Length: 161
Image (cartoon, rainbow, N blue to C red; front, side):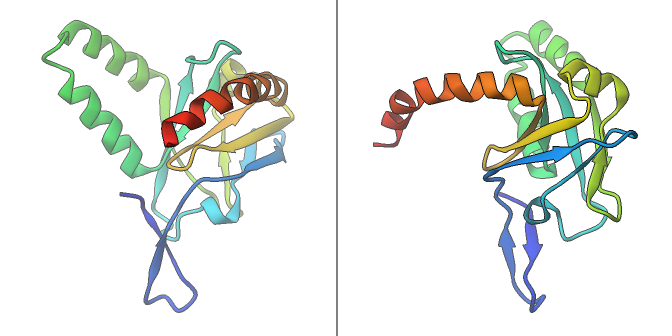
């Protein structure tokens, strides 16, 4: 389930997919523009920004819309019987390394100072669509990830057959 964006006639809505790649400057207050197609129609929708240390090329910021945050919580809760200590640790780490962020009137989100520092984001950022969520990267780190992705893409696409 994806949140929806109201269509021009306001009687119908379309799902929001996070696709494409955008390069944006980051201003002195660490605000970065969110692509218009990625913005929720409802002003009270908040994204969850998580410092995501999973990449071998360094940390990025993973950005989850509310539905994806709900799925993450459900996934963590479903694992609680497997190893409660690991799940609690994971919840603690994700909880302490995440924030809720709303868009301002100009369609920007402000990256908290510690999060931007952890992800190496200073004057520029690359926003990368992951279809159901997106990531915000330091441009140099993302170039390394992108090169690695190109090598792995042929094998990864075999999953689609």
